[in-house]
Image (cartoon, rainbow, N blue to C red; front, side, top):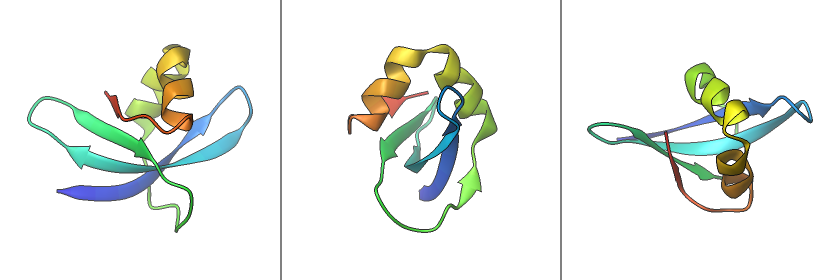
Length: 66
């Protein structure tokens, strides 16, 4: 199952659009360029704003597990 959503980069205040795939133990996030906002993933947003290196990798186009 997959869905679309967004998280907010708190250092810049901009939305980062993501594609979210649910796995058994975690969620896999991939950056997307266009489309509607979708769901706001607040738990993943909190985690990625603490783990800045994963957020930067996500914005660079890599797939990240949360």
